[in-house]
Length: 413
Image (cartoon, rainbow, N blue to C red; front, side):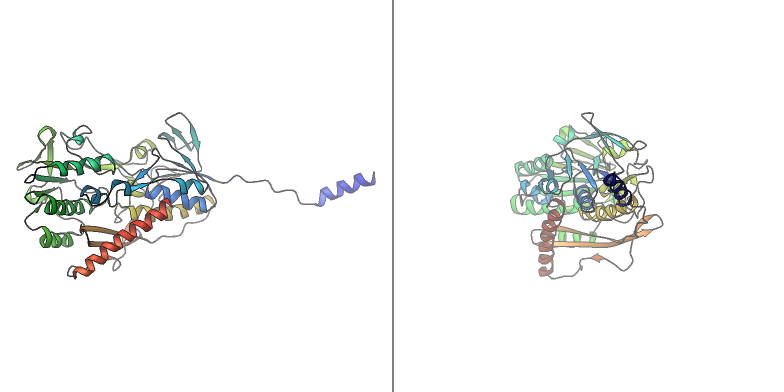
């Protein structure tokens, strides 16, 4: 009896074992520079993280223009997810087909479902094959876009290699916005380098739907110095906007002319990746309005959008931007799940471009929320000096390669 009473007394005064609380569940869709970064940051914060990515290997777009110009193997663009798995992130190789924002549930192509407390979308871009008359997925086999790295990158490279010396290469550049604003002009530069060294009687024509572009003075200075008789750029005012294409003859049509090409690189208009539309976070522009502090969708609560798909104001669509946005978004998600007010962020972006091997230029920007968007911080950032010795350009090219090694290690391990 005494023992029984003692036991009851002890039980009444000893603290009860704490009931284990389930860790908040975050699902990230898209395993590129934004999504993979977000998954790792969220996991390191102690959350339960699932990364949904359809592909077993990620093929990076930065430096893919070097692949097109024969300066780099495509294999150098391949990155796997082993390091992400080792961090304890659940990696689901599948395509998300439906999102129920009310129930907070993701449905995969095989019918499996994933519940979440917060959802992060990093779906990249979708090419608008319906936006340019005559162009489509079949036409891209004749006139490659090469704007998603992989088979299209190699197709454009093979076409350049097979072209007879003396042929004309034509690049069609879309209006803003699109992934990597200076990308078409770096591509033009490196293709011009390829022609200069491999097809010296050939020329390159760039037909542009804009009259101004990123790092324009720097690019034009490099073109004048290196490719003065080989590369011609035609802007919108000069009739540069391509209004239709004829794949059978590789003809590009503008308001004033028809341009036949031996090789045609057609970069079509773009929009947010398909899952953004499915989730209901894309507006009529095709892109995703977000809160610039948390990257939470303005259209669907509990869903955050980062990277190329987001409407990020002055911040460009780039790998650097996606990586930076992912870190800010992950920190905001952690705070929101803990019922804390997220801090107002300041983000940076640096974008390197190669005008030729060993000839680099760059632009940098600093951004912070203002009037509901991410806006440039005045006096911060800037471009490479216009008048600079060749040694400076060589250093910037080296910095570009170092940046790529650093960011891919940060993202993919």
